Image (cartoon, rainbow, N blue to C red):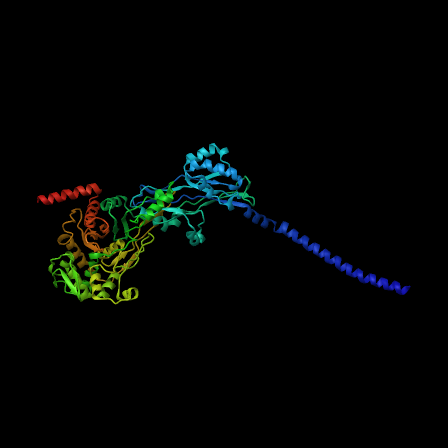
Length: 621
């Protein structure tokens, strides 16, 4: 009996110790969970609460005002912001039937079909309480009507969304550019720079190049919403105000821009007026142009499509985005090379009989009967092709020619602060072998010597070429923007200082000789009968580029004035008229009007009248 008792007692003690261990383990687990819950509720409760608020917080942008743009006079905005609104619909607040009714009612107000409105709200959006933008650029009168009849427009909301308005819609458009909604490709590149799917960005011109400065920073408006986007707290959280964009002042003089615009007329081509002492662009015209305000009207897509399909390519800024054979204007480079390299006696005369044979090919001069015997100064003044054929083929060679072309900056970007500049081309034997898989021949050198063949340049490069001659070896980076200013008080935040782009080792005496020869083009050469202005002494070079047509050519004129005048007063003028226009050698005539208008402080009509009086006066004498 006692053995059984001791056995049971021993067994009981054995299991009791195990029970105690289990109970202790359970207690430890309970304490652990209690501690963890305590940590979640009290220690980390504030952190999780903030995270929950972040998840439930709706952030709505408060649009920043985009900066305005002025010309150098700062007296008149070229671009402003116009008060406008965007209409949105919150899809989840409407049944399918009500959405259709609201779409029908909005249709006439927004000049949209009901189908177009419904297309803005695809099926995945139908159950969201977030507003979906239907139309921007809505007038205040429409907003007023909707507000007064809000019971007829459930789920409809609106917000301020200013529109860009361009006050000057002619030739300045290529410089200023325009803005538009960001597209998918742009967003992929610019997302990390603070842009989002609702961003409005510059698409071209100054609007694009200086977008970060002009756009400012949007503010933020906060509301608490549930997981489906429904607002659950009517008390608005503290907003972050927007920082408006900065204003920009251009180097462009609106008066001179208008003068150049009218002097060029409705001829496809371009005009560049450059201040060589600073690189400031005083005027830049490209025709044809377009009206960017049409991109914010009811038929915006159609208007854009019409411009894009126009065979005259109005979106192209021909001053920097189109390249052409420079024709005889390139003889400025040839003359500089000949003088600097001492490749030929400047008084040595070369006979022009009207053509030059190279191998079995005849290269003709623009003067069929020939110019007779000419030295370098006379050859440049008369723009004798045979003289420069001979100079390039026998005295310089393609290596020296291409070297000097590059020293003038041809075939390179100028770095102007307007996007999408093209670089042109300076051909070399190596280039031809790589691209055309053929050797360089004498005919190629002859063509290049008069600015034809593979050689191509932009008008802005021609302006820089002439600036190097004027500055006797220095070229400043051309630029459109002069100042960035604070919109609230007009304080200048940043001034764009002249930036030296290129310095040449060519002797100053060489450039002074070239200047003298360029003056001879006006007084005794091809431009003598056309450059008649008495307002300023002009020096320059004409050019007539072949394009494969028998009765039409590209017309060039690159010049500066006053000849021999103070550097700060000198201006370079480059005019280029394409062969697509009726042939009238208008580039030189346009420059005559521009020089007269600028230096006599006259508008187009006054300049024409002054030049007409000058012609009559000279005829009487």
